[in-house]
Length: 272
Length: 228
Image (cartoon, each protein chain N blue to C red):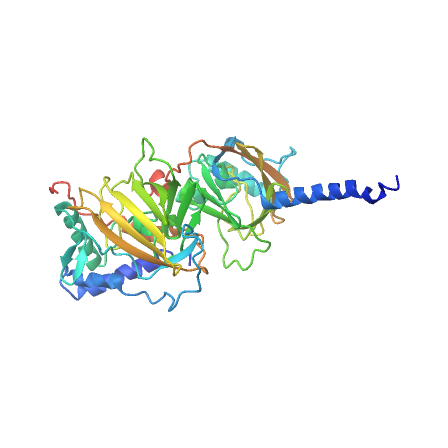
C-alpha cells in the first residue's frame, strides 16, 4: 500500500482524463467530477459534544474525492459552475493543465513528484491536527505535507520560499486564523491545477462546528495569477479511526520520473 | 509520653505522603520536551556508551566492514538514503537537520526536517497490530520518573543504524530512555537489541540541543540530491 501511495492520484487523474475526453477539451463542466461526493464519508457522524471550540485535535476526512476550489466569493461563473478569477497568465496555465489531464498526462503537480504542496494537506489520505499551545501542525499523509502553524507570533523577517510557505496563527474567539506567505511558485493550489505565484497570500479560518466537523474558509490573494481576491470553503468530517501512517512515495521513483517529463506552458510573456 | 503515642505514626504518614506526592507529581506532570532540537556530535555516529567495540556477530562484522567501505566509495547507491528513502531510527537523528517535538498527554510527535519524516510515539502499553514494517518503526512509550521510555519495533530491514552503515535485521528492537538533562539538553539512551546482528544488547547515547528558533525548514530530498 505504501509503495503504491501515488496510485489513487494517478487513477483519479486518469478518470478525469477519460471524462474530459468525451467532451471538448476545455469544457469545464467535466471538472464537476471533482465535486462528486466521495461515497466514503459516513452517513451520519459519530456522537460528538463540542466542549472546547478551540480544540481541532484529531483525524479528519474530506467529503469530496479531491479538492477543486469552487469560490464562494470572488469567483467567476463558467457554464453551470464557478471558477477562480484567473488572470490572463493564470488562465493560460490552468487550461493548459486541464488539456494535459485530458491527454492522460500528469500535470507537473508537486505531489506526483512526492513533494508537499498546499493541496496535499487535505486529501483522501488521512490528515490530522496535532495541537499544542505553541504550534498547531496539520499532518497530511500524502507527500508527507505538514503545515506548521506558529501561534501568536509574527512572520519571520526573512522567509526562504517553500512549497508550503510560512504560517502564523492566532485565535479569534473560536476561530483559528492562519496567515500564510513565503510560497514558491512551483505547486498547484488544488487537484485540478489552479496555479499560484510566489506572491500568494492565504488567510485560513478554521472553525469547529457543533457537529464535530471543521469548517475552513480560505481567502486567496495573488495578483499574478488572479484578477482579484477570492474565497473558498471546505468542510472536514471527523475520522477518529484514521491515523496518519508512514507514506514513502519515493519508493515509486519510476512513476515520478515519468511525471517530470510533463511541463507547464511558458506564461512568462503573458501580461496579467 | 503516653499522651504523644497516638502521634507516633505521624512521621511515617508524612514520609508516605511525600513519597506518594512525588509519585503522582511525576506521573501527572512529566517534563516538557516540546521544542526544536538538533543532535550534538553527529560525526561520532553510534558507539557503545561504556566503550569497547560494537558486539557484532561474526557475519554482521564482515557485512559492516564491507558496507562501511562501500559508503566511503564513489558508488554508494546501495544506501537507500541516496534514493531519498527514509533514514530510519536512529540514523535520522544523525543527520545535520533539526527536528520538532510536540508533546501531548497521549502522544509525542517528532517532525524531522530530514525527508519530512514523522515519528509518532503513542503513550500506551501495547503496540497493537502493526500491519506492515516501517522505516521509522512503531513506537510506544510511557513516562517513568521524568524519563520517557520508548519501545520501538516493526522496522524495515533496509536501513542502517548510523551513517557508517551499522546493519540491523527485522528483529531490531530499540529501547530508549529520553530525559531532560537541563532545559536545553535531552539525553537519549538507546539500547539496541538485535540477536541476528549483535551478540548482546548494547547502548548508545545521543544528546539533543534545543534550538532557539522554532521554524522548521522544508527539505525536498529529491531536489537536494538532484534526482527529480
